[in-house]
Image 1 (cartoon, rainbow, N blue to C red):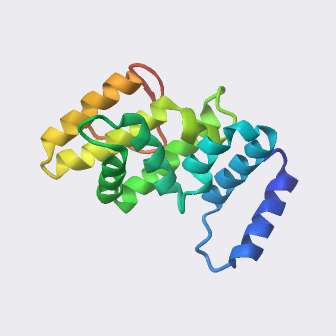
Image 2 (image 1 turned 60 degrees about the vertical axis):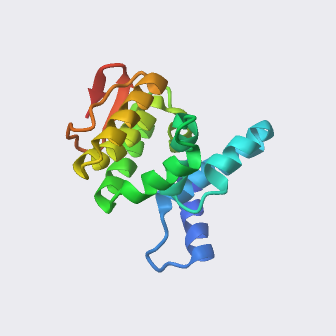
Amino acid sequence: LDSVYEYDEFVRLTRRNRGNDGDVDIFWEQIQYEASSALRIEPEAGPQLYQGILSQPSLLEAICTRIAHEIETELIPATEIKSLFLEMINPDDEQSIRLDLQAVATRTPSVENAMTALLFHNGYHALVAYRVGHRLWLAGRTGLAKYMQSTVSRKFSADIHPACRMGHGIYVREIGRAHV
């Protein structure tokens, strides 16, 4: 959003349209607003914005869908990867994923908003995939965790072992550099 006024107006409209029952996800609403605004400016981006954000029911579904389509392989299609992500991510991971996205959106000079980070930031995508791989590792599914690590390493040039432990609010800026 370009100004504090636009953000306040957006929040007011969101609450009016959805009710003020505490279930409104303002961060997700902001990302959807950013996508709608981008669509008005660049209609050619419509298919990507609809598939990646505007047609998704939640922030977590949007993130999982986007990354699943990027790391799918002949062995594991995007639909199975998305299901695996949604199965393995617990509430703590979801909170970390949200904080990581906020970190990328606010700390990376080349990223102008959260929508851009969600759609295009490879370091963020690698970090989310690591979090799923870590859950797989902890569940004793080490073969699948290593397969995911290998796939993510080839796709995003970020090699994070699934056994390592990380906090939240992280963004991966360059190969081999993690910033907290």
